[in-house]
Length: 54
Image (cartoon, rainbow, N blue to C red):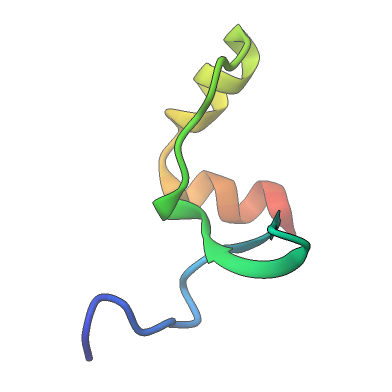
């Protein structure tokens, strides 16, 4: 399987771009001017994100 194919272990978020909503893998996004809490949360191991999102 190529690294661009979605898997059940990926977390997707919805973003709006040019008037369309797209599902994007969270791993491909970066932070833009995050506050301190957001920086800390982004550094958590991925397994902890999954638990926080359920």
